[in-house]
Image 1 (cartoon, one colour):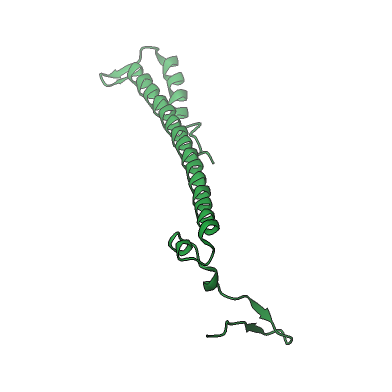
Image 2 (image 1 turned 120 degrees about the vertical axis):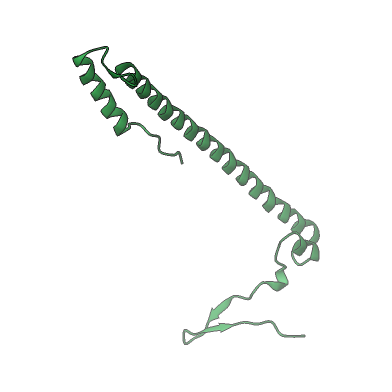
Length: 128
């Protein structure tokens, strides 16, 4: 699932409108040495570039996330196949199957059956 990209910034939108208004006063408006229309436009461009870079990085994170999911699925499938292979080669009740991470068939819990009166009864193996 892709991350939500930043499409519009309220600050950028406000700055664009303000620049339009300031240009109508004087296209070369200079209030002081550090408050000029040219510097304001540069700051706007810097903010736009930052948003574009932010969105690009989010896309890269999405791509990396997708690659990770694919790798995890492939690993999970291989893990399942490895365990199945050990089960096929050594048997489902073998020490090797247990060492590979499986649960020996003899160690599975027995299923609970409902009695005639609706209560559960547990079927347990007899001790030898």
